[in-house]
Image (cartoon, rainbow, N blue to C red; front, side):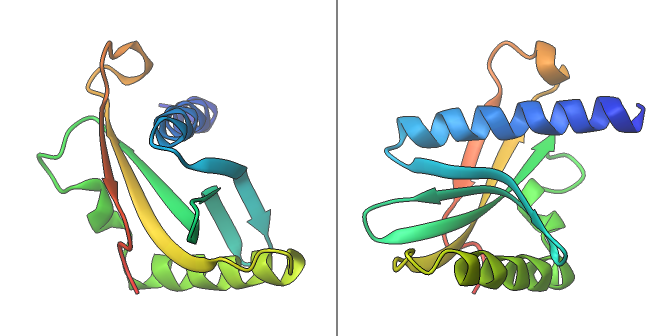
Length: 124
């Protein structure tokens, strides 16, 4: 799979996760937020939290679940990027939370019913 195909598939997964989150009552306020420290796939709010969400798209969980790919190094980059976002948006006064959305799509974008799993407060 080429880099362009991988990016397209990743954006598809992020759009699917955003759709599912909206269905759960979240307000998605940013997608693909980037700064010099890293990228946050989705940023969404609830009545209590601003959620910084890492989306992991996999064919299946036979090797490892998606959340397992969010190691300490990735968590640190997400925290730093989230701090930068909050500094740019001082109007955001909600409690920050870090979540992981997993999407399992065995046939990629051709998967009829991708499986969606959501882990609130996936790391501290």
